[in-house]
Length: 298
Ligand SMILES: [Zn+2]
Image (cartoon, rainbow, N blue to C red; front, side, top):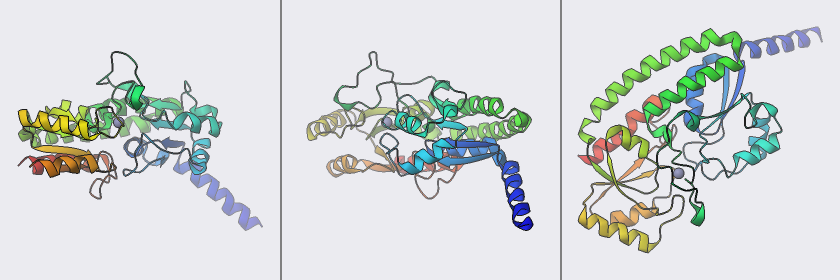
C-alpha cells in the first residue's frame, strides 16, 4: 500500500513538473504554435487534424471532455468555429475557457483581417461573414499571434513567465530567419496568378504577392454550381492562369472540373500542420507549401 501511495505521489509530482498549462487548440497550427512556445510546460491537444474541415466539426463527447480540463483554449476565431465551439464551451462548463476569460484566446483577434465584408451577410451559407479567418497561411500573421499567445501564457502561468519569454525569443528568431529564406525561395512566384477552390489563401497571397484571379466557391463554404464554374472558365479565357489550388482536406471535385476543361495545373496544399506527410510542424508546413507552388508554376 505504502509503495502504491508513494508511486502515485511520484506520478502526481512528475505530471505537475511536466506541464503547468493544459491547452485545447481548435486547429493543428495553433497546437503546434502552443507547443513551440510552451515546451514542456504545456500539454497540448488539437481538436482537429490537418485533414478535417475546421468550418464543420462535431462537438463530440471526447472533445467536450478535453475542453472541460483545459486551462487555455487556442482557436482561430472570426467565426471559423462558430458552428461548434459555442456548444463545446457550453457543454464543457469550464469557466476558464468561456468567452472573455483569460483562458479564451482567439488568434484572429491579434491580426488585421482581410476580406471583411462591408455588411455582415450570412445569406446563402457564407462561412466568412466576419472576414477571412485563414490567417495561418501567412507566417507574418503567425508571428503576431505567437507574440500575443506568449503574453497570455505568461499571464496564466506567471511562475514560468521567464521560461515562456525565452521560448518566444528562440521561436521568433528561428521563425524570422525562416521567413527571410521563404521569401527568397518564393521570389519566382511574385506576380504569378492562381484560381482557388475556397478562399483559403488571401494571407499567403498577400505575403508572396500572388494574384488571385478567381474563387470557384462563389460564396465561401458553398459548393459551386456548374454555372459558377462556367463563369470562372470564361474569366480564364480572358486572363489565363497557371494553377488552381485546393486544400488537402477538401474534396477536389470543383478543382478537378476546371483541370479537365483547361490546361491548368492542380495544386494540393497542406493548409495546416498534418495536411500532408511532410508538413509535420509549422516550419515544414511553409517549406512544403512554397515547394508545391514553385513546382506547379515552373
Ligand atoms: Zn474558410
